[in-house]
Image 1 (cartoon, one colour):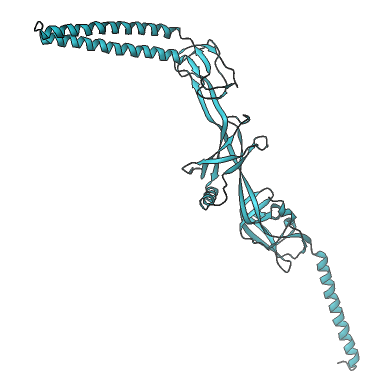
Image 2 (image 1 turned 90 degrees about the vertical axis):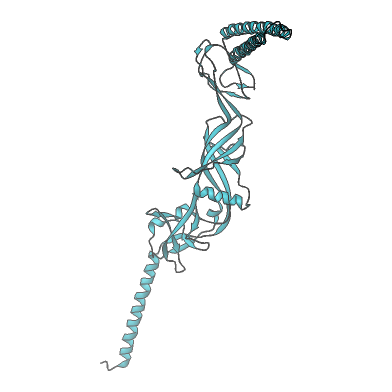
Length: 376
């Protein structure tokens, strides 16, 4: 078509150069549109995991002191919030009526004992006359029956004396153990009924903290103990104001049944309370420390959720983003502990997921591992 082959070759060369120029320009434009986003390489490291559980704090002993009888509250020897010793007198009820009853019971006992002495002498006299054939044997039986009746009256009188003494003793209410007095609802002179609440007393030398494990966490805890792993009975307590309690506690007991409605099991930890800072009925949080080897952790800001599933963007070797789901074991602080779905060496988008999409090509800005080192 072209007679001059040199002109034809020049045109072909110009066309090829133009095409190459266009391609280069497109690549450059694509490069300009590529986002530079922070990328982190997942590592596995030994870490210490602390898990919090709501705790109900109770004194090791907490009992209600109630009146065992009806009467007037004559004297109150203690004040609310006062420390007391075992056996210390706390309250005194009027006991005049019971002292009169005691005097009457003692008089009846003396009469019964006197009658019994006379009956015993009569039995001896009748026995002698029966042996001499002066009286019939039936007379001896009558005398012995009279003696038994008098001895029964003695037992009854002694019981009445003991009962009166008990009632007098009940008018004095003493501390059953060393402890701290709670609120006193009644005042001196009040007429109280049998069973009326006088106060409560708490032994605060140590305290119990009750908390519950979910069933799956209880199984992990129990397996670690059965396998002879590092003792994880030691727990920490954080008080309601956010401060850490200065003494560590020890898990002592685990309930025998799992609560069906909640799927949890209750545990009890014991803490020393030398300064009486903790009181019965307080609240706090128990922190259990678990040592984990080669734990895989990822920052919380790298994770997003879709339909209750957790995802991250994994960066492939060609810098493409791949939306990948994973199963978290737990979440603590600003990190997720990974159960499965991700492994050490995977590169993930550190942040900026809202500007990313599956299959997108990015320019990675590789981060150091400093954020993960703070996860302990």
